[in-house]
Image 1 (cartoon, rainbow, N blue to C red):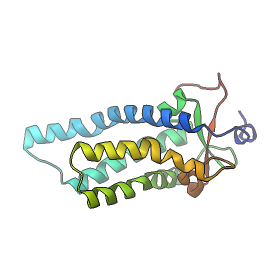
Image 2: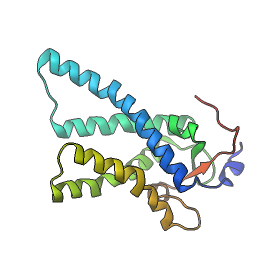
Image 3: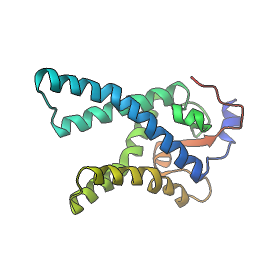
Image 4: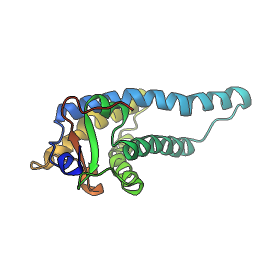
Length: 175
């Protein structure tokens, strides 16, 4: 499709976004398992080394950033987005630059801030933290699309000047 045709497509519905987000979280479990758990288990078992939590956070943030930016710049779609026929484009309908993709990733991760604040206030532990992160990222963050009744674009898309569009059936090429 041409950029003009892509820019004319409608944004995905709220439920398509939720389903895509749920599938994305399943894919990310595999990404985290390969890039984080395996090396850290090896470090712990072989050398008795455990990374400090702040380093672990930044390491995971960087790994996930590389995953998203690489897919968004390559085809405008992560694996989950390909399955749910959702594509990320800039406002003119073109693919994102690396700079724009990184900024979208930073803006999209802003949902972590209220989670950190809630964890600090209520002193959540272990599974409670994971449940909170899952709920906020899966349901509350996509609700930000309801703030914009015209384009139904989320807060990160507004800030990064990007758009999510729903591709017509038959337009998906898996890569």
